Length: 310
Image 1 (cartoon, rainbow, N blue to C red):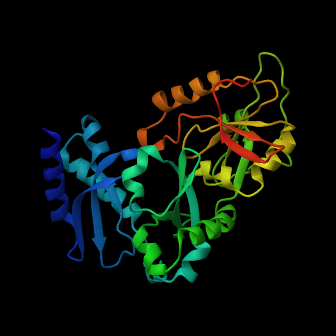
Image 2 (image 1 turned 90 degrees about the vertical axis):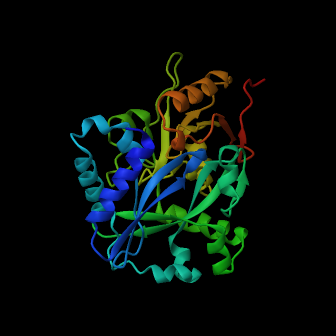
C-alpha cells in the first residue's frame, strides 16, 4: 500500500466513525525546520481546539498494527486524549489583555524556518528567531500550545516589540527555568513536575583534566527550554555561580547544555558534538542549531562562538 493510498483509506474509515457533531480534515501541516506532515484535524462543536493527529508515524510503523482498523482505533484514542475540555474558553484569545499572561516565547532556527516565519511575528536573535505561543492550561495537569501568527498580532493590535517585551516577562513565570548537572538529568532527577535543582543549590563539579563538567538548562516542563537563554539575568547568574564564561550547546529546542569555559578554549570539538547530536539523536523538528554559543560574563553578552579561540 502506498502512502497516498494509506492516507485516503484511514481518512475514510475515521470519517465514518465520528459522531455527527465532529468532522475530520486531511491537511498538510508545516512544522519546525521545514518539516511537513500529514495531519488529521478534528473539528468538534464541543471542543475548543482542533486536535491534530499525524499520519506519517502510523504509516512508518504500520507493521506493528495487525490491521488498518486497529490503526484507526489508535488514532481515535489519541484524538480522545487530545480533546480540549469545554471549560477552556477560546473566546478570550481575541482579547490581548486576557492572552498576555499566557504569552511565552521559544527559539527556532532562522534559516530552516524562513518560509514559516513569513506568517509568524518574530525577532531575529543570533542565527535564531524568537517566536511566540500561548500556553493554555487544560484539566488533569495537561497543557496545550497555540502558535502566534501574524493575524493574531493584527487582531490584538500589538507590535512585535510589544509581544517580545511582554513574553520576556511572562515566560519565566509560566515556564520556570531548571538547571542541573547532566548526571542528574540522565538519572531522571530532572523530571517534569519533580524536584528541580536551581542555580543556588546546584552542585559544582570540579574541572579536571579529562573531566568536562556539563549542566543542562531547560524549564520545568522541558518544553521549548532553549528559550531559557533569553530569561533576563539568568546566564549572568549561571556564569557567576560557575565562576566562568560559558559555552552553550543547543542540544535541542527543549534544552541547552552549559559548560564552564575556563579550561575549554577551543570550540571546534564542541561544534562537532552539537552537529553529531543533531544528526544522530534528534528528529528534524527538534533541531535548534549546529552552532555553539559563548557567553562573556564581563560583557554580559551571548554570541555565536568562532571555531577557535585565540
